[in-house]
Amino acid sequence: MLRLLVISVLWADSPDNVWPISDVVARFQTVAAWYAEASYGRLTLVPTVAPFVRATTTSANANADTLLHISSDLGGPLKASGFDTTKFDRIIYIVPRIASVGPKGFTFGSSMVLNCGGSDYVTFGAIHELGHSLGLAHAQSLRVGGRNGKVMTSALIPPTRRTRCPMRKSGLISARMTNRNSDGSRRQSGTARARPTN
Image (cartoon, rainbow, N blue to C red):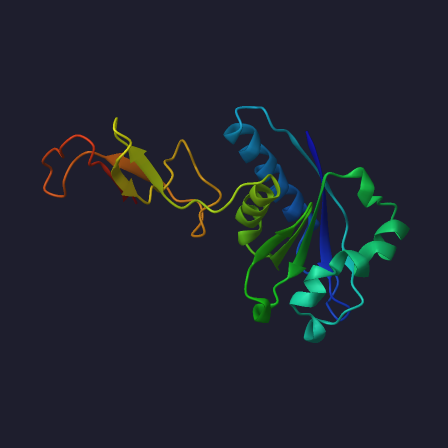
């Protein structure tokens, strides 16, 4: 079981309630359900969604360094609100997008920042960054070896609908393996390739 503390962050000059907290609750219920299914029930996420916490930094001054040190900036307000971050296994900070930072999410230790607050990307970003916090790297390729140890095929294998991979940089992609050529004829054994579906 992983206890998550999910914190929606407001910059010092942000208006109140820039996205509904009920939306964050629903998104993290989806994240928990995704991990329960993907782990065949072996991983249970228990998210606690905090109300908005206001940072001391303004949106104009927020940058990558701000995000790396956000726990320091929010420590006092969180404690004043009754949240003890040491009681949680993972801390997830959702901040309004800072376009100059680049990535929409990153993980450092047991803390994550989702630089995409209020967007639909929060759900995938949380699944992806939690994967990093669990030790998963980005999905790259699959190499299948022959009996003599030589590589028979090497291909970038997109996840299937059943094996959804949250660690692909391009997101959750539905795909299927095929053993047919583009003209419909069967491929020779060992030469199957991944083909995305719509």
